[in-house]
Image (cartoon, rainbow, N blue to C red; front, side):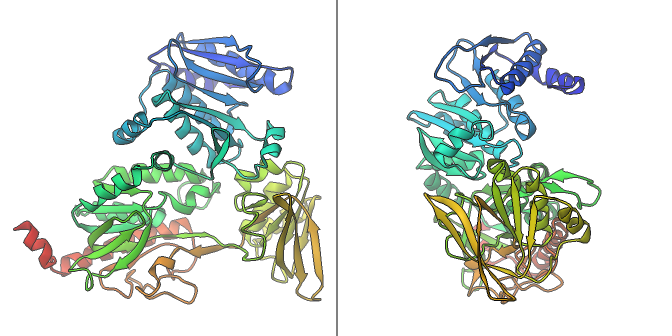
Length: 529
């Protein structure tokens, strides 16, 4: 299971174990159990603090294994073989159960330790899902820090009967005490806030006590991260408020066009961006959704951004980098069957549709790439494109047309998502040339039709284009003096990571130029006196 190089790396990590741990493995007669047995038998000799035994408990899933701290209630369980994207989750679980301290913020750790009640979490993941490790690792850490919290991470592709019984059609899916609790990528902080009902109010009080920033960045994607770095490097007080640090990039699988980086993946790039921002004196306020922008002319000399939790932030200049989100089809049935067959991330949810019939909506690069990836997993793919021809690069189209289990339909207008028994069973589309209506029977629909800017909260306060994008000039200036914008939320064409990074840097330099050319608001001078 592990090559010699990986064994050497893992052995070096396991030297950090402080407490003895036990691997308790539950096997059956399956091939996967044999693979799990091989993996655990390779891990055990890598540290004298690790022991391995067979778990005879008839009530646990098989194949599965628990990692327990000997002589305590601390432990986590994996149902399946945590390789692929989840191998890091396995390594972290070994270290944390073994007493190696987490790098989580101390106030978050203390908040987890103070949570009262009994919580039995189950998270369903797929090995190809880049968002799942965040959830698995967060819940594992919480179960290590608080003995009242337990967690089992379950490979949905390996436990298909359970997935079908629970009608799980998107990962990660989280269950708490046997009931659905959460779905999609969640950070440790997001899970803690959702579990701790008092967290939002406490965070709002802390935010309201903050002094005004010289530069306040709204949004934590590539544009926001680069803006924060460039601003902080100027030695000015900088804050960044983001609903989700990393934004849309966190949902991106392969990235091959970031100059000087031949290949990376979204979650890795997000982690690197966040670490880079933390190298500077930047106040990072995650899980903060902006709801209202008040210009300095209306807010007493400072621009004010009001947040969803009731708190407000003030700043001499603001950089808006709220990014974009997946565009929806806007047809009957789409919202009703979202995460019940309608999906937006083929890498995350594709394995749940193994051997089944699915559709991909969209014939651009994203849609064609999704169809190619899915064709290797599912039984059949129908790709529907609204235009009369595909818009993807020719090399992608050539690959797509070579696949025997893919059907391409152009001039197709999806009109309805159909379902039965709480899950998708097909879709209807109209042939735009003939007007004829068609029905396609299938179990999954992957929507890949572009992005929508996250700017609804700015309507009426700042100039937006007819597409909802923030109108900016060549200096990233908006219609409000002292307010700048960058990234996918703006009118700058070509929504690319590298372009957003450059635009964020430019916006920060423009904000700095604005600050040195304008006096400090009288309110600030009064406070200083």
